[in-house]
Amino acid sequence: MDRESWNKFVLDNGPRSGRFLQSWEWGEFQGSVGYGVSRETFEENGDVIGVAQWIQKKVRGFGVYGFCPKGPIILPERRSAISRSKSKGEMFLRIEPDHLDSFPSARKTINVSPADTLITDLSSSEDDLLAAMHPKTRYNIGVAKRHGVEIDFDSKDFDSIWNLFCETSARGGFRLHSKRYYQTMLDTLRNSGCHVFSPIAQKTCRVLAANIVVDFGDTRTYLHGASSNQDRNSMAPYLLHWELMRDAKALGLRFYDWWGVAPSDSPAGHPWTGISRFKRGFGGKEVSAPGTYDVILKPTTYYLYQSIRSVVRAVRRAV
Image (cartoon, rainbow, N blue to C red; front, top):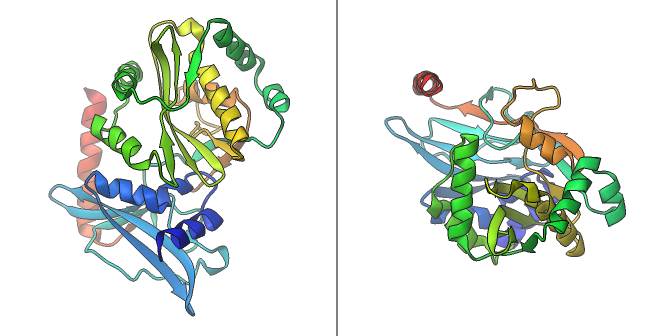
């Protein structure tokens, strides 16, 4: 399949949340940061019934595995008919399908992409979108406006954005990709069909909040975000998201994907509790997917690898 046909199949049949990860352009980006990328089609009687974009990941001492984020994408009526035609000697295949019908032996593993998310339908009027928000969210949007927060929808000042991401990472205790990874993402995809850009909220030329956002098909996805430790009472992230929603609506996009919330039944101590409360304040529909699974191809090697990973994670938690 060529790029146009591939993307059309993904847009027509992919999951509402995360289809961009199976776009042709996302594969090109992954290749540019050093991963092996292969695209596979599943056919029946000459018709394409599914696609899978595989990213080859290396595990030192164990070989490689294939990761198919938010895929494979299989037509609903053909889920039991597929068989994988390509193999690169992988230890296992890590998949995130919409349904597990085609992979009955798959083993649940830690989610890579969010399994639970919130999606706001932008087809409502701006007044209705505001009315659907939590009162505190609407109030904080107004606070940001009164504080003089301004929005730049596509900042090229990546150094300032990166500094903000590092600040947020230190505050939240989570790990980032390398600076090169994010910079390459923006450079590779800024002018592509899978459009990635970096909007910021600023006040008196100081960046207070920054996002990395993806537009693909009719959906805008909030992929990464950061905010400053300073001037937090300006509520800059609230205005940044509201203006991104308004802009997406003006461009004719239909959905705003918040890219991950804690499950509704999760305990109060869930690590995403705070950010999920922030996102849910904007209103939307909660959507769930099965999550991330492994199809084991080399059982002995796989279970040894998983045992070592468990030990490493336990040591990290203890430090």
